[in-house]
Length: 406
Image 1 (cartoon, helix red, strand yellow):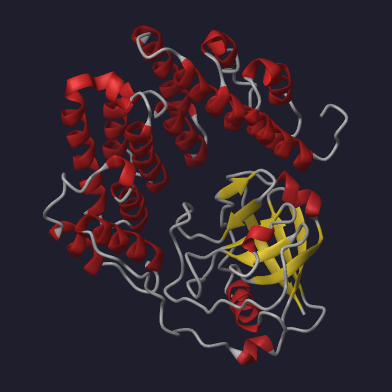
Image 2 (cartoon, one colour; image 1 turned 90 degrees about the horizontal axis):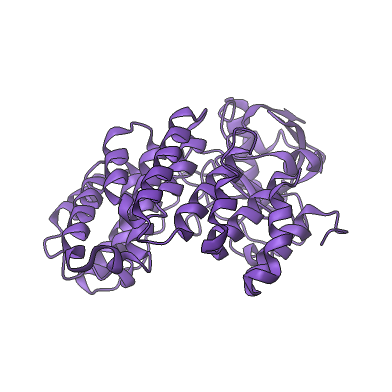
């Protein structure tokens, strides 16, 4: 692994190391925490958060420094709480306070959310997550707090932590999830729905009157909030013991052929990001509707200032969400276009979706070949210059401007 120069291969190796005994992988993983490539460092920290060991908690805590990138620091904060023994309550309370300070000092909602996620690694922090959900205004933080409640409910130590009092704690969490369903916020509703329909958490006996859920579903805007609509109605069906077939939006945004006529076989989208320039060749003939929509949004300056809200090492960078949390779109949807073209290399630009024909404004660029996306996600272009920039981009970086070059 030391000799490997491609960070993508290193990320894959690190993920594979989770299948080996901790003592055998520890040195290699720790060394990669200090990698100059942030994707590699994040992958190493993720391994330690899931596969660490109690004796090394002081080592994990030593990465709680201002010189450690926040993405790695937050994951190592989570590793401390994950692997500290449940009964070391004073130690965990003290370290949670350190994480809360990190959260307070954070420069962006994504950094703040990373520390909220770390807080959720201790079951006893359920009440703190409830406070964060209630007090914070940013949707990204609220959604992460809800996800944290889900993390605690699925923590294998949940019942051990609360003993006979687990029912009271679970009821308090249910109140928060119910508030999220009734919030009217698409991201909160979808997140709570995912938790409430998880069979492992056995909510069916807890929720008999689903009127508040059905009221929330009736208020969702279609096709704009189709992902949330399907998540919530799927949750309702699960709790009622029925089947739900996800709704597909009716055709509501025909191809603008006038816009498409301005696109040539050599047309380029020049994406100016906070990390540098990415040039993408558009696949007009293979995805005409998607390209027309993309060019229309470029002409309207829609993407200016949009954040790369999702970055997964050796997978994708994703942007185009008006909310910045992945649950936003325009007030229309476009059709999926799935000809025989494949994600067989790096740099393909594809449309994010919540199922076929739900695409709108969000798109991603791949770090490497991603064959599991084939046939499900529209490909409408490929990077022809600036893959080094794609590999640099991290969560929170932004698009300054996109210029359409005919």
